[in-house]
Image (cartoon, rainbow, N blue to C red; front, top):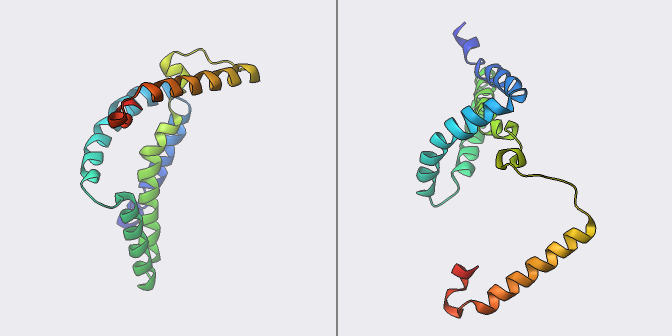
Length: 145
């Protein structure tokens, strides 16, 4: 029974994800604007202290552990660790993919644009960027950008 509990995180995370797919308003309110910012801020600050990408280190550590466990013949442990890693992603970050669309969150009126409108916008943005570039003091180009 104890061994089967090790496999529980993945099905639970998949159930949360299935539920979240049908309730984007709740995901937006509870997760995207509630739990996630509270968790992401300290994790980001801690990760910024490391000179190499923490995610890459985590993936390497996970792969190393899986290879070591496979050499030991511990298939159940590999399955449990992969399930836990998938659950952390499925129940954590991937819920952001199920939140309200950005245009709805920002209250934007999104409509299809014509090719002429897009070309005009590109020209206007390029002209604006050129004007700002010409006005920028040479010593502070990064701040002006």
